[in-house]
Amino acid sequence: MELQNFVAIDFETADNGADSACAVGLVRVEDGRIVDELMRLICPPRKVMMFTHIHGLTMNDVSGAPKFAQIWAEIEKFSLGSGAFVAHNAPFDRRVLHACCQTNGIPVPKQDFHCTVQIARKAFNIYPTKLSNVCSALGIDLNHHEALSDARACAHIMIQAQAKFAGTTSSL
Picture 1 (cartoon, rainbow, N blue to C red):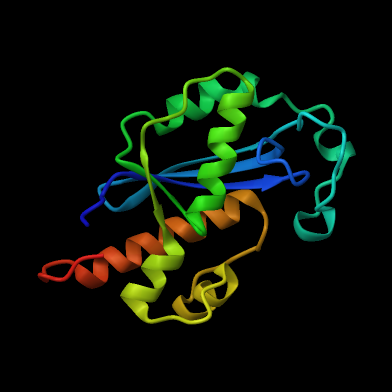
Picture 2 (spheres, rainbow, N blue to C red):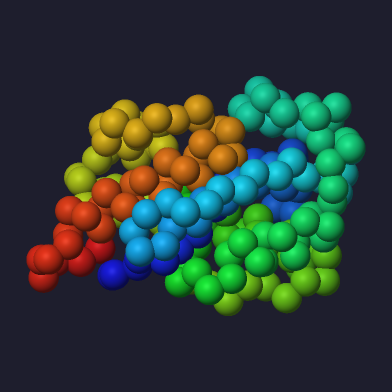
């Protein structure tokens, strides 16, 4: 898989609902290098914050933030022309993105998702593959569960994996 243009994405959620995004981090990669970053807090659809102990965000942090529908145009513009989304545990972030779009009557983006959990296993034989483990093994800075830091880490994992396989017949 040769993927030189992509957007690494990470969501933090407020509750068990997949549509409860409370933060999103995006990192745009073009020609194998980071060219732009975007982080937005999001006011979730319900006034419940179950995961403060994970990401540190409280309802006070996000209550004045825009709703997902209000930032969608910015996310869509940021990811326009990217070959795919890249995320750590991609099924989670894909589910959150799709649920937020569906809840808000927004067409679901067509980009494929690639998972840096699988990429770290295949490219570097890293186990366990929690984001903190992969970043530690690859020397990537991480402020875990901060959306932009997590997205930036995913971008670096993909860039390093692609560099490892550059010029070989092996692929991700």
